Length: 231
Ligand code: SF4
Ligand code: SF4
Ligand code: FES
Image (cartoon, rainbow, N blue to C red; front, side):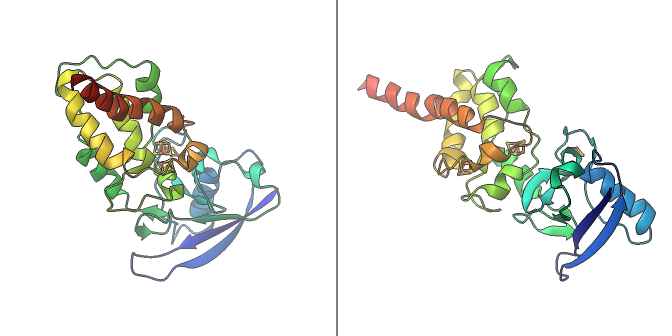
């Protein structure tokens, strides 16, 4: 089959975006990542499309982009899913464009530092249950793209912040809890509108609803309940 690929390009953060269309003779099971690689090597080797990728098997989150308007991993999107329709690629919109399909997601990684997502107590990093579920987060940013409450530079860190918080809250010891609960409240609980768009979009299939229910119970409600009991 001949797949039509339309790619939004932009040479730098300040340049105007423009569109380029390519036709690729391909099998229907090819991934969008494979198509970009073929376009770059076979059609425009002198001016290849800039994009990020590493694992090409849904493990690193680097290849997140908008595919026909929906945030997805290019290595997880297959040609047959789009039938005869053109496949339109654009960079994620919540982060500044570096070049073409590559965006600067450093805000998301800075947020991880601001979350204080590490353990200071001598905790055992139990990788079962919620902790395992949360550890599957790729930090791809797809959830942030559809989150109505997230914007880069804000105090609310979205589901990309929920996952690392929940992972540690699930295994934390008493000494770490106060700090982790406080950061969770400040950077997730108080900003989340519970729309659950993040749950439907997550390419890792993380059950963000389940994580937020359990983390809210631990970090918010139990703390209040304990405080109430002391009175
Ligand atoms: S929660 Fe899902 S969509 Fe959000 S960053 Fe993690 S893997 Fe990506
Ligand atoms: S539930 Fe809604 S507001 Fe909360 S993190 Fe998910 S998409 Fe964002
Ligand atoms: S290249 Fe790693 S998730 Fe797509």
